[in-house]
Length: 347
Image (tube, rainbow, N blue to C red; front, top):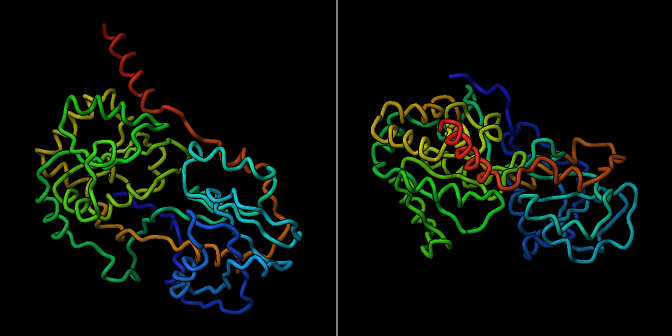
């Protein structure tokens, strides 16, 4: 198996050098999904080799403060003035297609730092990371192949989907509707009036071979926690668009719908893998070369950036242009339209 040579994220709690001096001050200006943000960030601080001061006290603003904005909560009042030495941080982990209204409250050049799941962000905070196994990898982060095979042997059902957003920008629901005509899909979530709690999720993942990790939007680098849960649970993810994942995930660890000419062809391949255990296990061989999935500390990644960044002059010229590029609306519908086109050509 080809190895990914790029280490995606350096984890603060694995760093051997401690950076405690010159503590940058971070003011959490907004809430985080309407919750006080500073206490949440402070919970992550103990495991980070870098140290920053965190507060939600807006009276603490000084000339070189870093001001953190969660864009979903941006309707709150903004700072009345700002110093050129201050850094304003654009933080968001949701799809641009569901957040286009939130930037109406600020000028296009308002921010200095981007902090998102996009790999070209100043502060990269993906929902999870995959790292190669090295000589320094702790044993508890290495999969045991016998354990992997045992987990795979307990999977007796084909396809699982957990979904709460019933009408999506990607139109994934239309693709699933066609896929279900050719293979059984166990569906949980609000759309099916069949809620599945965490215990249920773990139980169902253990029983199923494949998970429909179709995102609600097809946007640049938009890979949410549902995908990384698949790698934790050792259930093979099926995604809509291959190119979004191939530079982030281990080779051979996922299946992409756009590799197939139709939902029927995809279903036939999943059925083949369901009865061919050797072929199915090939999608789990990544566990021999890659560590168990880790989660990113938002606090630590930002604090690390602030300790390493001395330039205060950066301004993002147009945050709207940067954020909203790279999305394909109604992508699953385009896949289905391609299926119809191919059928017409054959006739």
